[in-house]
Image (cartoon, rainbow, N blue to C red; front, side):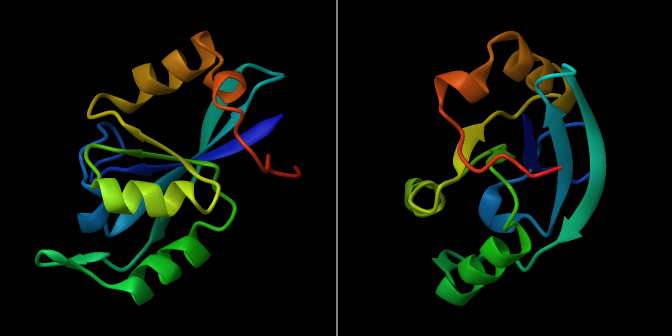
Length: 123
């Protein structure tokens, strides 16, 4: 199966962005049959958090931009934003670490099975 992951990172090396402050997500595809992951693209999004308030329209816009994503990796996310994303079928991980070891851990622990990720990509 193939899954797509959105990573909140300013540099593509470290997961270093709070979900609400992220203006770009790096998109990685995991191929569980080939046991590989690879970078697909970067996508710009509007910031969800403006000061200490969330804009509902921004959430909807981000969801549209990340429509084919099953998992989001962030450095930090508020409980409300996490619940909102999960209620729409996404799995969210707070993982403020280097990207590659986190992706390797996902493979090593087969987290797509444990969390029953939904909607694998159709590639």
